[in-house]
Length: 307
Image 1 (cartoon, one colour):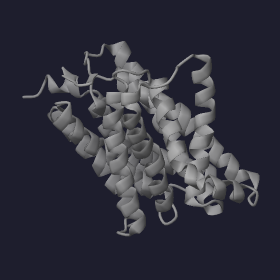
Image 2 (image 1 turned 90 degrees about the vertical axis):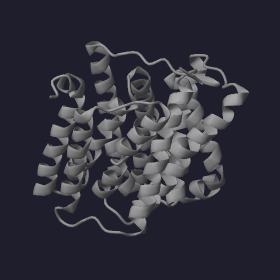
Image 3 (image 1 turned 90 degrees about the horizontal axis):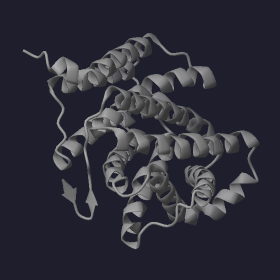
């Protein structure tokens, strides 16, 4: 199957490859979940624009250094628009929307909205890549999403407001990013793709550089450290692991489905870092999500015994 000028080769995963995908995706989601919590710390002291620029500037520096020593080189001219789109959807635009939303909603609520990405991504993949989930897979998705709703609605934390709306648009951007990432990694390595995309995001966010450096001289080291952490780990390292998982996965949903874990992990990290104690809804909802994830990861085996 080929989609000019990019081509895709889909191969079945053996048990070893499948385990590697699960580990890569799981590690990524754990890193991203910590990003929800540290963003709450950062946006209290820095503007949303400054957080976005500083985060990806911090991510770009180690990536460019690694790319230089590995002699990665530059992307082809025809692919520059692709990486600008990836930089906008997955990083610059997504981060600005994310940071604005985090001013009015909690980390756990934000992670709930982002956790809708697997469903949207599955629909995109079904329409464009002709990927199909069997009945067990869709049942697992429903169970996972039910766990998210249970976790959120337990204390009626879900409200219709601008923060929720901005987070919804951010989730759509990230679903589109996952789709375009498969085009990029058809011809580039995960390191190349993420380096080009994050450098593109820094270029797009350059208008906020002057105000960012002005703000940095007026805040303590804690929010700066939080943003640098988000740049190096959830962004640079996390997205390389995510791209690697997308390359190795048979279907995009094998990877994006792990995003259902973000509300549970974010709630746990909020407790460990900020001190927000998880309620019974988090425990019950989190358990439901884990059951759905277990079912999803065994959907092929269980699908063979469907009556």
